[in-house]
Image 1 (cartoon, rainbow, N blue to C red):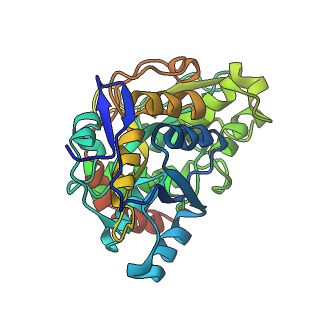
Image 2: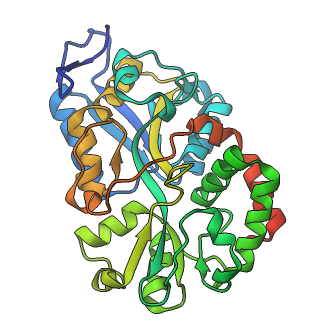
Length: 338
């Protein structure tokens, strides 16, 4: 295997020699906005001597920048926090396929693009939260959110949010467009308020009493367990949670992932960085530093993540979800989901 990094014994990554022509740098375009990722970058540099030059910003802005730069783009790696943008970058020809024995061995097939343009490196489960004091019979499936008994109780993010688009795309993949359209229509009828804010705001809505049921990614709640989150951490006892569809589909998973840019000037370094993200030490840090689930099976969870409990995830191929995003947007628009 000709790679800058080698994976030894499944746990340790060490640097091997670079060719004389290979620059000791990596140009990373990233929409991950977590201060805790500093440790990921610094450890990679310490292990390999490869300096990381970062361009950070909104994923759509980074994609537009890569497109405008064309063949002269300095980007080596594109890193973002959802399947939608990874699929979009692939469809626009901004990512290249990668052949890596390390990535194939470490990252489950359902967390990879079918042609290896991108790989998932961490996961967040999109689950249901509820007010323990007011909701005696919380929804047990995503489909339950459409039940009339929850009228005026549900808070979810807007239709323009990629997490909303992803869950709807997943339901289309499982249930079909017609059934998902009926579901979306009914969920809109159950809204407690017009969609607003981020996932933490949905959880705060439960604390404030504005929402009885909310949908959020797990890592927002895990962060409130691990550290102080204003308007949430002091009231966690009143918030219950459900991993939906444990008897059939499994709980929906979002990913943070990345791929090698189509015109990467430092291609070997780019592949080395992706392989590093699949190492045990990097995987453990995704969980410990940002309350995410590792993509690599068997890697230890942080206490905040482990405290949420064991669950059955939806293991649908993420490429299938990506293929249904356009249909999901149509469903949301037809439902009047703001």
